[in-house]
Structures are given as C-alpha cells and as structure tokens.
Length: 118
Length: 250
Image (tube, rainbow over all chains, first blue to last red; front, side):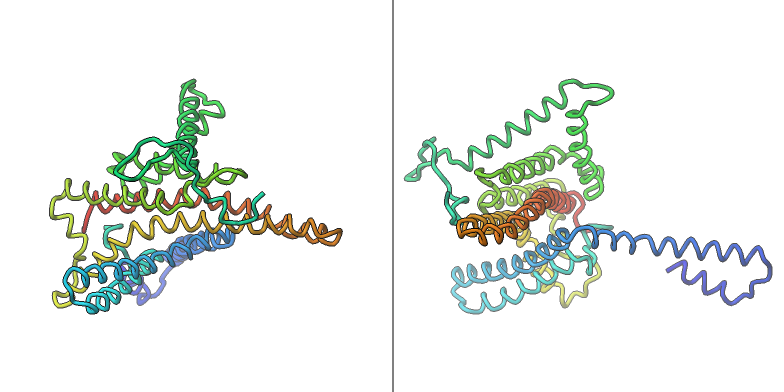
C-alpha cells in the first residue's frame, strides 16, 4: 500500500538525471525479484509432488465434510433435547455448511484466519 | 493369504487385561503395535542421546534432526511460547510417524487406520486447546468466536458459524489421518492381490502381472510419503490449534 502511493508520487516528476534513473531501475528490479519469489516457490511445490496436492485436496474436502457433519449432529441433538424437530436440523445443517465452507476457505488461505496472524 | 483387502484391519484380542462393567478390555494387536512404536521411539532417542558427542554420529544426527524439525514447526506456527507444548507435539508427531511407518511393513497392523485411535488423538488436542485456553485467558478465550470488525447485526450468525467451525476441528483432524491410511492400505492390498490373481493365470497372466507390480512399487513409495506427510500435517495442525489457545482473538 505505502509503496504504491509513494511510486505514484514519483511517476509524476520527470527523471532529471542518470543517477535518479538508475536508482529507480534498481528499485524496480528489486521489487520484481521480490514479487517473483513467492510465486516461483509455489510453482516448485506444485510440480515436485502430486501427493502434496492430493493431501491438500484431501484436507479441504475433510474440512467441508466435518463442518456439515458437526452441524447436522448438533441440530439433531437439539431436536431431540428440545423437541423442535425438524427445525434444529434444518438450521444447524445450513450453519454447518457455512462453517464447512469457512473452514475450506481458511484452509486454502482465501480468507485470512484472524487467529493465525495478527 | 487372505485377498480380502479389509482383513488387514481386523482387531485380534491377544489376552484380557481388565473387565470394566460388562466389557472385557483385551490386549489387542493394535495395542501391541502401539507398544512396539513407543519402544522403538524410546530406543531410538535413548540411543541417539547416549553418546552426547560434540560431533554427532549417524544416530545422534537423526535424533537431533527430528528434534529440530518439530521445534522449527512449533516456533514458526505457534511462536516461541508454543515451545511449552513441545513434548506434546513431539510425542504426537513421532508416535504417528512411527506407527504409520511400521504399518507399511507387510503383515503388520496400521494403528492409525482405525478412526477411534486418530479421534482419541484429535480429541486430546481439542481438549488441551480448550482447557489451556480457558485456564490461560479465562472467558476472554471465547473472543475466538467473535472476530473483530463484524457488524453487530450479523454477529450472532458469525458466532454460531465460528463455534461450529471450532467443533468440527477434531473431526477433520482425525478423519484426514485415518482416511489417508485406510485408503492407502486398501489400494496397496487390492493391487497386490491383482499380482497374485494374474500370476496364477498362465504365461500371459504373468506378463500382465508386471503392470500391477510396477504400480505397487510406485504406491509403496507414495505411501511412504503419505505416512510422513500425514504425521507432519497432524503435528502442524496441532500447532495451529494450540496457537489459538495461546493467543486467542487478536
């Protein structure tokens, strides 16, 4: 964020001398290298082992199934205890599905887990 | 030799140990392999630590490698404070890894292919997180379920979903390890039985049997990887969950 705004400010002023230009080129090179690094690492892990991809897929599917199962189980128990069948099952199955999707998105790193990094 | 792929998971009672209520508790083949795993780990670590050489030998290097590996995993996921759980995570990792690796040897029993075992391990982690979190942070621990910056009108819904997500952890944690080991061992057994079946079907059958043989060799290598990977995944998820207990809801 901060880098982007700073660069926008720089782009407006013309490159007046060689030193400034080379400094900017160097900075650009650094940033390209920095941006490239994680993506290259990701490619490596994807190519080396199909098994780790399989493990990842397996992890995501169990996360979803676990969420739905827990929701269904909890809803069923609430139905039995409170005698509100079938509403507990309906509501908690849907909530469980939502929790499962949340689990999957967290495991895949799409949604930032608020508890993992501060 | 049994060709039934499920036969390898059968529990065999060796001798009765105790009787609780109407249920007899027996020493089973599963328990025997757990004891074997514990004995192997203990022997490995004791032998590795015995020489205490400044320049480590092979065994000591291996033992130090395992220590460093688990310690790095904990530090990178749960922070330096997570190191107080090092014995717990180290025990889980080495136990699961050893049990998985023993299971790859033909004619042995894979302890982690039974969900009751993995669920017991996952529930131990779950209750450790819950009890330590409550002990350490009191009711503030439940802040875990209410992420910051959520509008008040959808907060009840989010809290419900977060609680379900939290409760689903031991299930996904245990099912992953159990299903991986179960599926892998069934696949191995099925392809291995193809070799025997084809091999008994004349000269063309023997030629054809080389295909599943090649597959079984590949699968064994894959299973070796899975055995390690699943132990690692179990350990790293334990660290992530413990991290919640140590620093809930920033």
